[in-house]
Image (tube, rainbow, N blue to C red):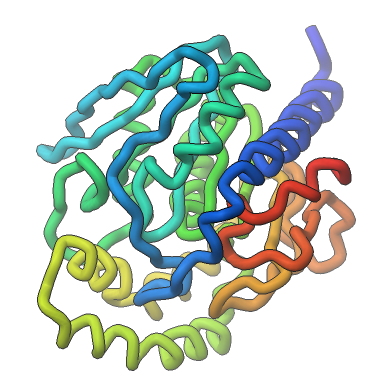
Length: 297
C-alpha cells in the first residue's frame, strides 16, 4: 500500500492532468465569449440544455434527486472511476459544460457528472437567500444517491469554488482532487475586498430589483442577499491539506482580485509555489476561452 506522501503525489498528478484535459476541452467552446457579470461577481445566465456526450456515443442520463424536499437534476455520462463532477458558476446550469463534458469523457474514459443547482435548469426553486452550504448539501445528496462517494475529481468554476470549499471540508475523503477554474476562494474575501465588491454591485442589484421578476433575476438576487456577512465568514475557511487541488485563473477576472495561489493540498498562500497557472488573455469564463494552457501542465 502506497504511503501517504506517494498517494498525495499521485492525486496531485491526477488533478493536474485533469486540469489540462479540462482546458483543452473547453477550447472547443471558445465562441461562447466572456461571462457576463451580474449581482454576484460571477453570475451569468445560460440555457437549460444538459451537458451532452455525443462525441463519445454515450448520452447522459437524467437522474432527479431529492434533498430537503426539493428536486435536483443530475446528468450522468457513463464511464469508469474516478468520476469527474463539473460544477458551473453563478447563474449557470449544467449546459455550461455541454461542449466540455463530452471531451473529458472521451479523453479520460471517466464517468462525468453535471447538475443543475437549485433554482437553475430542471432543478426546483428554493425560497430565501442562496447559501453555499446548502448547495454543498445538495451536491452531497446527489452524489450519495448516485453511489459516487469516493475518488471523485471535482471541477468547480467561479461561484462553485465556494460550494467546493464547503463540500471538501465536510467530505474530504470523497475527493481525489479538485480543479478550481477561476474559482471564488476564501482568500479573496478580506474585509476591504468584500466591501469593494458589495459597493460595486449595489447599482446592479438595484437595477435587478426594478426589472420584471423572472426565475433568473430571483436567483441572482438570492445569491446577492447578505453577500457581505456571508463572505466575511467564508474568508475564515481554508482548503483541507489532505485534498489536492490546482487553481486555474484568468488574467482578467471580473470584479474580484486575482488570486495569489491555491496550492495542491495546502491552504492558499502568497508564498506558495504550488501550481496556479494563469490563462493569459482570457476572461472570467477561461474554461471556454483558453485551450493554450494545456501545454503548460
